[in-house]
Image 1 (tube, rainbow, N blue to C red):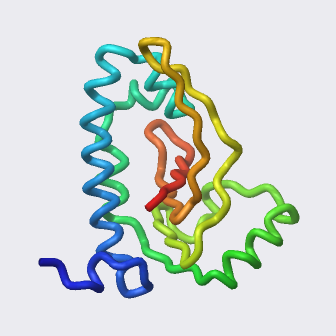
Image 2 (image 1 turned 90 degrees about the vertical axis):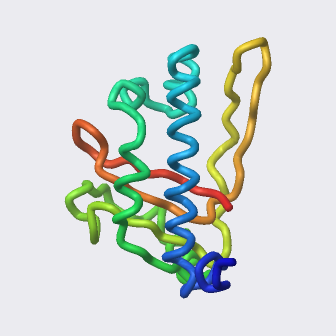
Length: 150
């Protein structure tokens, strides 16, 4: 059985949370590999970048496993959201670390809902709250920012 500080949503639990995100990312990578083999356009659209599936899966889990860790209190998250509209344009080389995981004590509002057309005439729409943000160097340059839920 895992110690509580290895999996709880607390500042001391962030290393355990990272391990869970890495594990879940590996599972997602395997599922995306299977889906990309049969439905590459759907996977590319869902990921928001048609080039990412071509880079291969598995890169995000490995990079996330070495990410610098941050805990953001509810007060700091509210302050950052309030100031977000005034932040000047930035570039990835200005990040405090090239790969990081920031977990929030209280969730941020999710992005605008997106609708995805799935095989078989089904659709999915959602905008879950954001409990963590990961940023990673992207294959081929740039930075990928992942919004993570619980």
